[in-house]
Image (cartoon, rainbow, N blue to C red):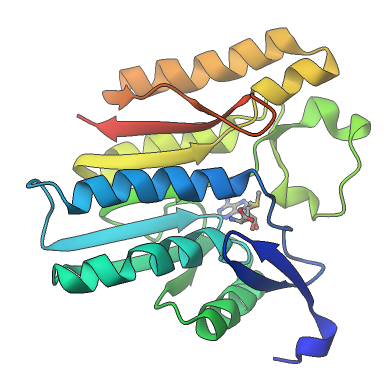
Length: 233
Ligand SMILES: C[S@@+](CC[C@H](N)C(=O)[O-])C[C@H]1O[C@@H](n2cnc3c(N)ncnc32)[C@H](O)[C@@H]1O
């Protein structure tokens, strides 16, 4: 890959190559990685861990999330002789070439697959995602350079998140986890607090209906709720 045509961005402990088609990794997503790694390590040190573990990143973009997670846990997986597969999915096959390149440069063993949300996956123990989650209602109020399909989740914003939760309920093994970056609290900065409440309510009520246990949301550097974790009961 011709590195001179690419931009390098810092994310977590690494540098990732991106181009104009790739979503630029954001600092708040490092919280998603940290939360995931905490839960995952607890699982690996617990007696309920399985001999084979699968981790799926939905909407992988540059691969920054799944690659960072892999690097944090690869030594423990090896020490405990846990077989594993790490998969990054994206709807855009061009960004997957870049994700693949980043994983080779950083030294992570990830399978990148093109597909719509979780459609390529039959079974998983852990699902992580920073999906497009911004409401189209703020489209004219924000200026971003990232491609539109990487940002907006629908009229409310949570539409892709809800679809991931529905699909995950069929795919996750019992006791499996979902880690999601969410944007309902951002809406209050646009005078859309009511829409934010609907967005949050939709996520929590669907999770309950799908029999997920939802953990207290984790806040970001601006003290707003940014990461939601749920477990299949
Ligand atoms: C907010 S970006 C996150 C990228 C990267 N994970 C990160 O955190 O920097 C959302 C990503 O989801 C991808 N995406 C959008 N719709 C999708 C779909 N239906 N199925 C799979 N991926 C999708 C976009 O191409 C984009 O790479």
